Length: 221
Image 1 (cartoon, rainbow, N blue to C red):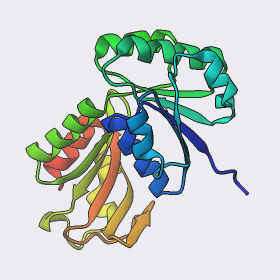
Image 2 (spheres, rainbow, N blue to C red):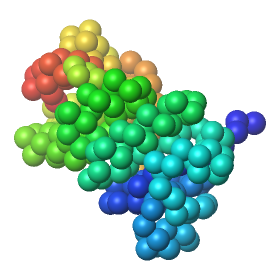
Image 3 (cartoon, rainbow, N blue to C red):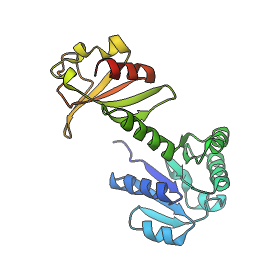
Image 4 (tube, helix red, strand yellow):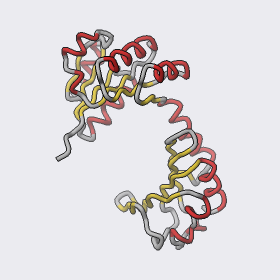
């Protein structure tokens, strides 16, 4: 049986607090850390454990057993210096996965140099997703997976109604892959076959290079 992962979230601001709630809602064990006693009090009933602690204190982190956790998310908001120092401490004491919220590009560059495993830009990423919603009524959602590649949820129009995946020709004609089709909230077809029929308003979960996805959306959908 696969062991359930456990996470630490350091910093209970807007992003860190929301992350704690989402992880807890899906049954993930979360240890929340913040030096503000009021925030600890607020999230004490939300997470598995909430600890009042200044995460810059390396000895205190080790004493509380931080090495036993699978992933630590550093979501310090305003204090960039504290975010960098905590990330450095976590990597030096051997935390395998350290994810860090970056405030700006300078912050990101420093985090990259000291070994952060993943850097999160919640405001920038959300802005990009909203921008794609605004510019195209065909896009239901958008997730960037690299600088040049994305996963896009495209709403099937009248043009695609009744066509098979093979007829749509996403892969051969546009180098895009339809990895799933969502027909309703409880009806998701993963890795649809060439003969799977698409209906109007189906959501096509499509992965590819950004330029290819744009061509596919413009020409075919």
